[in-house]
Image 1 (cartoon, rainbow, N blue to C red):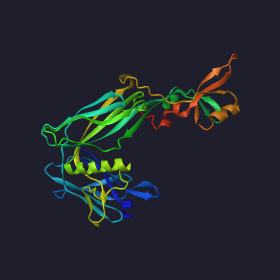
Image 2 (tube, rainbow, N blue to C red):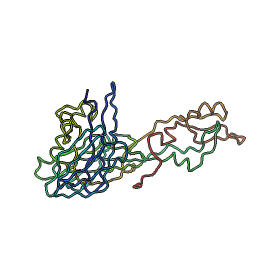
Image 3 (tube, rainbow, N blue to C red):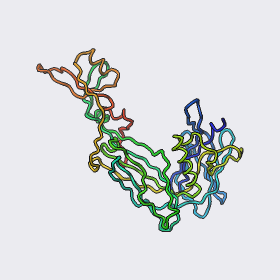
Image 4 (cartoon, rainbow, N blue to C red):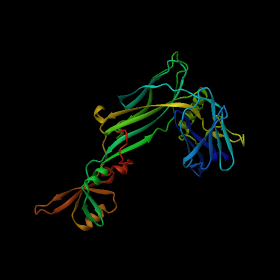
Length: 351
């Protein structure tokens, strides 16, 4: 069906920061959805004073505008022209100011560690809030790998190389829709809104954890749209699968008014806050990697069988009474090379 290739527009026009807009199409291939980036489009932000700011494609399907301060007295809209010649236009939007994040807090709970946010707008102007976040956590191997099996033999591993596979950092971005409204409250206060729950024994809190939260002020229309999207994605399991036709964003296809577009663009200031949690601060966390320690005789065929595939790595050696190496101790790669758990050994600048 035509709905298989609907344009999906994601991102925010960032007041006072860099804007990234992502364009993609969701293709249905038999039973699975494949995201195809929309490349080569012309994307621009237009002001109600006829000003035009062109975005450049910084990576496939991602269109970027450098740090820009928008005039709060004007309204702005997004225009997209695809390679195929289709044209899309958002509604005109006012520039929203986002209040500061008052605090990010965490609590040890029965199910894990809950992360909570407080914010308020003393002018009572915000009322509708959206958040997303990026988690980063440190990963360690269970022990150092002193040897490497290379060129069909066991060799000493450079200590620097050992360190490179012992300590990693892993990132994960939020995927669920996080919104809250204070419209029914007398004052514009977000009190203890839960952003996330880190489940018990998760490796996130195994050593040290950080979360960077971004807060956006949005309008009632965006809030209503996101509420429907959230309800639908929680039922369907995927954000863009089987979107009901009553979910209408603020972007239209002006070259074909019958064509639906998925997405809601806001123009808003983004405010951020980061906190760290150390494992030592969290009672009884008990993260544990499931490992498989082995001892392998120092014999060519045995070493080949145990270590050639890379599924096991070597930690230390055992010396015989005569002073030679009798055997090697090993373990699964997932326990000795932190990169196999999806991390990077490049330390983040903020760590």
